[in-house]
Picture: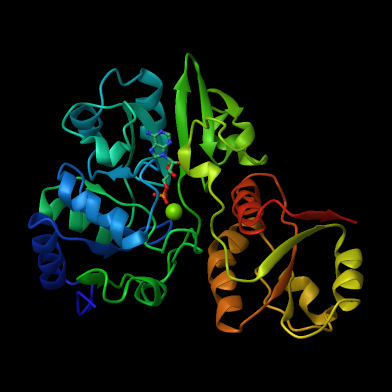
Amino acid sequence: MQFETKLLSSSETDIKEAAEIIIKGGIVGMPTETVYGLAADAENADAVAEIFKAKGRPQDNPLIVHIEDIADFEKYAKNVPDMAYKLAEKFCPGPLTMVLPKRDRIPDVTSAGLDTVGIRMPSHKAALALIRTSGKAVAAPSANLSGSPSPTTAAHVMDDMRGRIPAIIDGGSCPVGVESTVISFEGNAVRILRPGFISAEELSEFAEVIIDRHITEAAESGERVLSPGMKYKHYSPKANVTIIESSGTDYVKFVNSQGGEGVYAMPFDSDEKFCEIPCIPYGDSSEEQAARLFAALRKFDELGAKQVYARCPSKEGVGLAVYNRLLRAAGFEVKVI
Ligand code: AMP
Ligand code: MG
């Protein structure tokens, strides 16, 4: 192990300590409203390279740059369209990442060699304080080992990153629970590259919205995708996950006919009382499901689950983000009943 991995609070003193780590080119586990991130100085190529190592992340998967002031869009991006400012006025700070042409100060390692950069202003107080105190925009992917479910508590980050990074700021559970909505601009339209808490429905009040097909379809091998992260199997517990698309009654009937060692159900809360096999429910509303999905997937690992049957979430609003993460966790295995 290279580091002790200190757990910090979000007190002013601890944020200063974390900011010092960032200034010196180190990595800090950072709470945000979406999921925990691994933060490093976005302009320091060596520091960012260490993030890729700590996570075991493929080099062609770009990082999102986190800022604490909307005015900084111009500092890291050029040709920012008016629409970006309109959206920023409504949704920033918050879980919306905008992909824009990058300025040269963003090193290639941060953007994974693309000439664009994803930028967002988080709303979590500790994240904003870390960026402000360090005086650095931070590149921050989710703080999990590559391929594992994203972390929504400091304990999850510790499980994956103990010994790999010097410190984690404990900011409690992430209220949103799924990563930010990632969009790019195409004329007057916006394209959703990754669904998140800011839904297509909300964005469509401002612009025509195109939903990229890779949100719900697997990429063919070798196919170019606009959001590189979308081609990887992701968010996966060790168990095999199968999504069951059916009514609640048929879902319960199906899981009750399964059973066996290591077989679990992942129902809605309202199904739980009818399930006769062990289960970890993940909420009823899409918002609850977003907040609890990743913790539930991690729990299956702790329990040594071999097969998980998850009830298919709604595909509307925030539900699309939940469905997209679950599809990847399931390697696109959906059984329609
Ligand atoms: P994560 O850091 O794990 O939240 O993943 C960030 C994701 O945002 C990446 O996997 C990409 O899919 C997407 N992203 C970040 N920057 C860009 C960019 N410049 N162009 C397209 N997608 C991006
Ligand atoms: Mg991630």
